[in-house]
Length: 191
Length: 352
Image 1: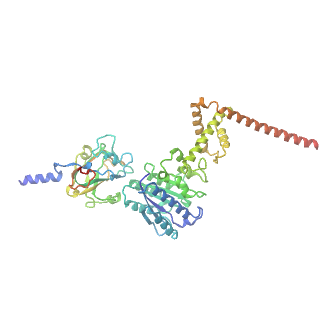
Image 2: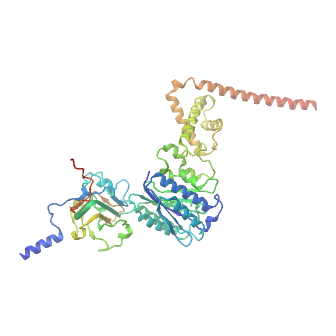
């Protein structure tokens, strides 16, 4: 019994089991507020996520401009719980290596996160090759992402120390919190 | 109509007391600030503009994001009594960036417009530091426009580069940052700014590129005297007039070109002949740029002529004849005059 519990706990620690009801949170994106610092004008985050689903097209990606760092600000139209993250790149050398995640920090700039450490940022993750090449889900510290309105992903560097970072696909998986903030879908009742 | 939050950084160093710009450098700059503010706010009602000074006791934010002209005027008036010290561009830009970062409306793009009227000194004179700063601005999605005037105009090095030019180039992404140089002349800084790329985007999207193009940084930057424009009229100020002028010039050129082969084949003499024939053009025909444009126009008009030759075929003839008659008449008159004067002098000699 104890062994089983321990096993399940260990399992939960490394990789939260995919529960029923987990959905891609991209459908709750607020495209108006979506922005990314240091993105190239041609290959921007807005284009990548415009379809509100994980990108599968090969001619669309997110690319950095002045140097290898990127700061993605992903705003949702309602509060969500984020469980896992998928970041995929086709080219390992240009794939993100270390990322820092922050939650609900409007006005976030590079200088705020560059030297930040936990708990200044919600979580710092070093991405493995499997994560970025195969698009393996990246487990987050669930407790720190319980009430997310805006998720900030700061890409510190890439695997090949290139001047350019490329992200081909990105997905955020979790649960919407059960409050209705988005009223745009409501229609007046017919009488 | 870009959505923009703008921060204007003005120079209030001692150099601003100089009177080489009308009436003083500071007042000329204040006028330019006024125009920039109006243009930005008019182009989109959500746009905001702030203002800060970079000399005196240090960089100082005077007004953060505002749509109220009164606040800007008040700030300038207050600063006009605080002229002194030296400018510190890197600090000022960093402060401006912070002010922009905490703007209310995140949908606004960020822009800093820096007026530089004093020589670069200290950190600002170090190209490496400035380019690094520019990269940082680019990374944070901040566009920068630099307006150089008075002592702020640098002598380009052997490769024609200046620190400010490198700075703007490093900060520019998809051509959103510009450098405008305003030499001391009868031109107001605000006039040059209106026709420069700094404000052209905000002014009117309806002006065709080929008409607005002449007001580019090349013209305003390189020209030293007033009236660098083709017809002495700023095309962006009155696009319809510019269009009419251009059309009439094209027509005149078409007529000239039709009669040209009979008189001469040399395009250079053609163009100078033409600018002589149309006295409304104040431009200097020896100007290389002008020459090239004229030749291009001639080439275009001759092409057009080829297309609808059948329709226009009879029309050039009378013009041609007139032209020849005039030429001959002139030549004859001159010959006659010379002959008469020769006769006169001979007559005088005979008398003696």
